[in-house]
Length: 202
Ligand code: GRF
Image (cartoon, rainbow, N blue to C red; front, top):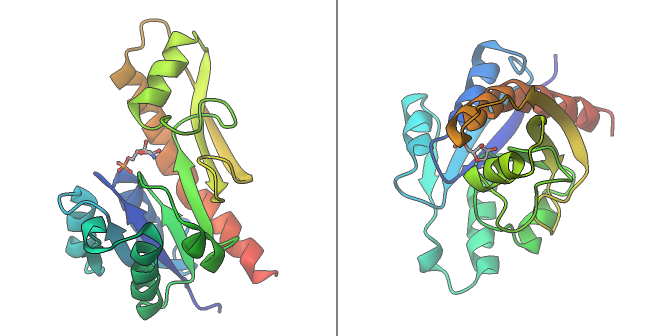
């Protein structure tokens, strides 16, 4: 039997995707393939930190103001992740840009989820409700979510998995966001499993 891959999850907010990953590790598609080893937030009030603590997972608030550069900030996070034996990083509603020292340390082992069908509706400023508003404004009939590897550009790395949902007449931003979020929760654990299986064959 393989040793479970140790995930480090970076968040900025509510952490429903983190919850989906923790649930999948406990009793879903990631059971015996992965464990969440540490959760890091750039915001002290991110509810995802509380979700992690309730599950007995180390949860850390990393305050950017304590560091003079983003490179130092990520060096500190890297050291924390290393202390928890993290093998792979999952960004789950994490809103800060990742610096090259962090990207290099987890090349091919860092993934992100985006609430739109990349390569459209991505890039700087395209996060959360901005994505859904742009989809509605463009009168798209299909939206969805994308899990992709992280590189130095926003929402740019190779795509691992996508899930689609319809955009229905009368959809509000909130309704569409909720429909997309449900597909995020389904595809993120599945995409992580796919990456883990790929790592095992490298
Ligand atoms: C999700 O829509 C995710 O795609 C985006 O931010 C949102 C985070 O939601 N990057 P949550 O914190 O996982 O609930």
